[in-house]
Image 1 (cartoon, rainbow, N blue to C red):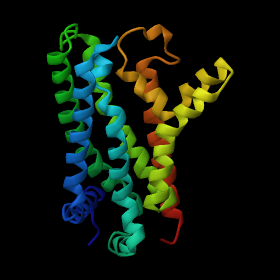
Image 2: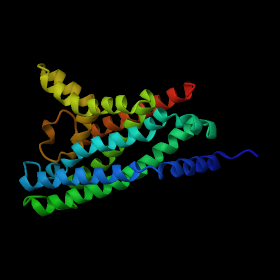
Image 3: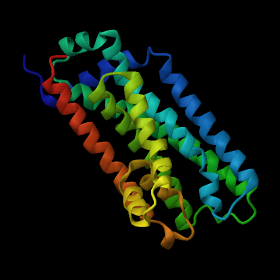
Image 4: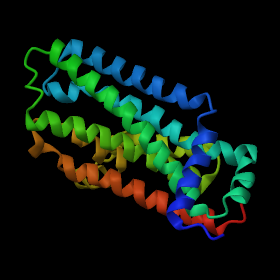
Length: 249
């Protein structure tokens, strides 16, 4: 019997979900993301700042590390334990396996990000006197952009894990992109180089989506910056999936 592609995709999703839901990390990472993101955001909101909305979402800048580790673990751990061999024997269409992992990861990150971002914004509205109305365009754009940004970081982490197949190396690379790059930019002397590097890196460009004031001073506009992060995510995942298909394991 030849399975239609849509049936096979459903079977792959069920197989991956059965495997993933038995992992303790599937509960730990979402809870940790929420605790870290909301905790940092509430702390920042208690002090206020020039951009109230950005301040209320500062937790996203820390929570992204947990999301990246979550994404890396989802795939790299299978390579580390050798379980990936059994996975590919049972499900030989490797692109569908990667797609199923990405879909399940995104669904988890989406729910987690919605809770984290919503709680952070509500806390900011309660703690910061000059916080704009929750229905204001900039607030909705920053909040929605924060959710999409965290989803992009998840795909980026999954793509790097597909390329490197090591949890430690993959986590180091992703965190380096997110946190080491801004420090390197600070050491650049030429202002044009600073702006150009800022505009093409996923962390610096992507996080501009949280900004709502003085946008003209940013090296890249918020939605364009988010687009850079999304592009990094899809290109990295695409290359990683191609490499997985080309390797023996």
